[in-house]
Amino acid sequence: MGIDLIGKFSVTEKVHNDESSELFEPFMASDESILLSYKHARDKVIFTSKKIICYDVQGLTGSKKEYRFFPYSKISSFSVETAGLLDGDADFKIWVSGVGCFEIKFGRWLDIKEIGVFMSDKIWFKEKLLKMNNAGLIQKTALVTILAFVTSCSQNKENIESEFD
Image 1 (cartoon, one colour):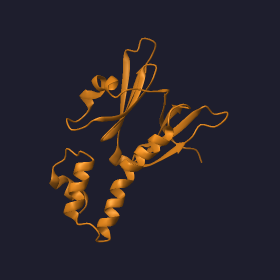
Image 2: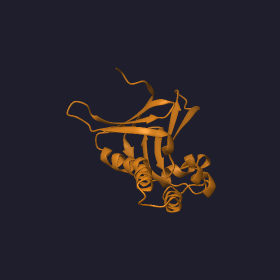
Image 3: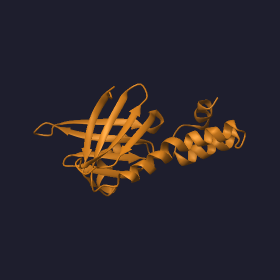
């Protein structure tokens, strides 16, 4: 059974986060920051404190541009595949709830394991806290406070609390 890809993207170079800030700032919340930034020619991918944003410059003139947004809260799973002997790219795939699969190919010299560790922290940290709450090891108020702090959530406390009712 094949994977229903909603898009494919490639990056070949890690860049300083400041290099991407002006381009992506209009699409970021005031309390959101760029944590990882990559590019390939005219295209870029950033990992912020709240989401992944892909910037695709299309056509010969580059006048058509597309931004794709993937909030961590909507990513149900991901996979990391390291580069092989004949396959020069490492693959990173995310499955987005209600949308499908999106793939980003990383150049062989980029550290794909860094992405795996980063995504594990973003996706499964919340899951671990929920399990602790369900087991009675952490109170709901502490859970909400931790998640609001760690994710730099711009929602108010009541909206976060309702997510766990």
